[in-house]
Length: 243
Image (cartoon, rainbow, N blue to C red):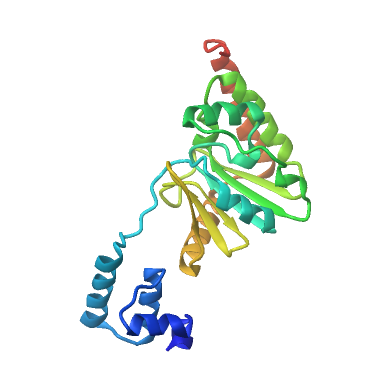
């Protein structure tokens, strides 16, 4: 049973003797390994939810300033894919943008070395046009921020795409997330950063990322979008001076 459920034998023993286990998902694995179906499986699933207080999973929209778990994954991952629909991805932020953004969130910045400098790693960023049009503090800050995005896109290990407002989105962009070597995905919420390692979760987010990547423009078309948005911020800056 332990082998079929991919858990340890002592864990199966704990379940058999009615003792608690660390993760409710372990119980679900054992139920699946038993080959139960229909009402019996549904009844057991309901019992597990009640016993462990398991809420049905939902990821709320938002941006987290708590990145401890994600930072460890970023430091070791080779192929990183990041999607954002509400803000510029952290790794692409200027210092000024990061300070203004963290000030709004009531949290401090990360600091440290930007992993983009490691050319042995590959980074793909896909953002909506709305993300680069959402600005903290002042329009002038965004002019510098968009210049940085243009510069970083010229790095050989960095690829940046923008889903323009003129393109239909392939999915509802509920939240930002980052894929790490297709082994884990970090999902940002208003209050915390969730690290998901279940293969089904990772695969679902990879599918969503691929869909947004297909809708995005890269290279010269991406730089054209940046230039147009930059000009809009230059015009906006005339009526919104820097603070």
